[in-house]
Image (cartoon, rainbow, N blue to C red; front, side, top):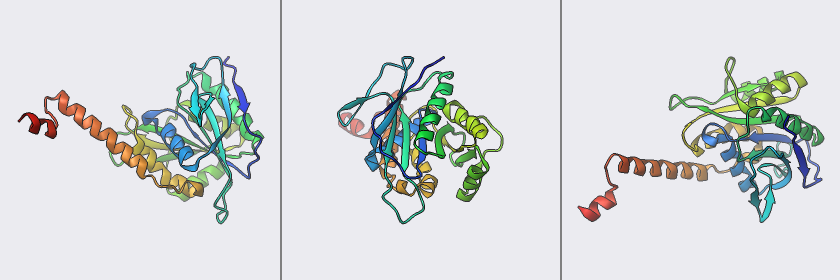
Amino acid sequence: MTEMKVIRYSDQRYDNPTAIVGFPGVGLVGSILTSFAIRELDMEVVAAVTSRDFPPYTLIHNGNPYPPIRVYGCRRENTSEDCGDLIIVTSEITLRPEQYYSLNTALTELFREMGIKSVIALEGIVQFEEDTKIFACGSSKTAKEVIEGLGLKSLNDGLVRGLTGVMLYEAFHSGMDVIAMLCPANPSLPDPRSAARILEPLSRLVPELKIDAEPLYKEAEEIENKIKQQNEYAYGVAPKDIQQLYG
């Protein structure tokens, strides 16, 4: 059985915090959006989860080395709206399927210690059509009511994989409110455009996330332009500036 160790870097207390969890998956949607929010909100590392079974990586943040699974926190700035503080759990590594059970246990215990009762899990799903809507599902009656209020398409039948799937059914049993937002994304590449799409409904739940998503759209355009150039080379069509140079 995989043994997980929680490291605490801060004893900061948070007021009615909401946790957002984003791990690598289809299109890296969860990791991209959580990393973006952490940078934009200048959040501090307050805890981390590590294990001898994890890939031997460290992430350098503000000059300090941290395990690949990290927990960030920030105090609420917008006191005019009815919302709590924000906790974000993010990672750049993909675990083995059996490791998610132990990770969920470690995170659930940490959430209880921090007073977290509401969790939002971000997950990418394979996009089959260009205008596919964002799906959502919840572990409790309260979570389902929130989804209905956001106007998201409810997932009534289907399969949710990875940590998000484990969190959902464990929360259904324990009574914790977990909402999973499932955003269609490109399964072959990082998809910051799909990550940006989640910001709008997410910011209605967490007002602190009313941040400009333009950098994500710009990053998506850069990726698309690079793919276009690679395809042009692959099919023997040189970019316009090279054609002019040699034409």
